[in-house]
Length: 306
Image (cartoon, rainbow, N blue to C red; front, side, top):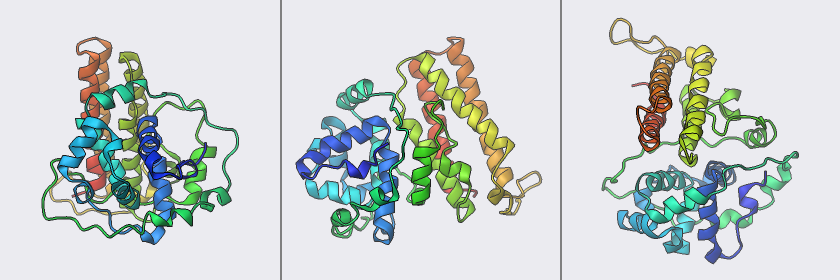
């Protein structure tokens, strides 16, 4: 797999097309990870998408595509990588016919290479890309977004995790999985950092675009299976994080809280799968249900235990 930042065009006028391909190929999370990695401490506290693009500008992107963005706006998005995920999520919910067409015709299967890029390749374009974090600072205005997204997103993963994702990801794995290399490594600094990693994996659900009920069923089964495995073996870092029960039966630690949530999501997904396979609901309705469950999963994980 070629690192995303090694393919960015030198000419800014070509950035919208290049970024559109990332949005439609399922490679956006990797791009965000690389931008975090290269930005280091230069990437400040994540800014709300509304601080970079006004609601009116977001609607223009939803209606006409990324080509309506100026070079300055694109630089601000690159300088605040998590805003790209927020924009992608907005387009998943509100994108017009142009996005429906793009996602319908997007390439679904990406063949992974047999050799991984070297650490040198990861850093060789770091110096030219420093213009991105140097864009003018952005402050969040005191207005609320039409679609409120959690301000704190997943922590930047390490270079080793990027390489693991390329080298160790099973070739015969399901098209989508919550159990990414970063999640399986379970080497997060804090319990919330691990939950953020899982939320980031969950957010990749919205990069999947099944064309029919059979493809959707495969994706739902993959998430259900991942939930079951995570229920059976929650990471030790969650078990070591105590919680103060507010009532009898409340979880005593974050692992118990996580297992309860995961059982709920798995149960909801399994129920949707039963309805889909029995044709009680049609493909669009089942996809809407699954999207709602995964959106709740991502939101709850990012918020953490109350």
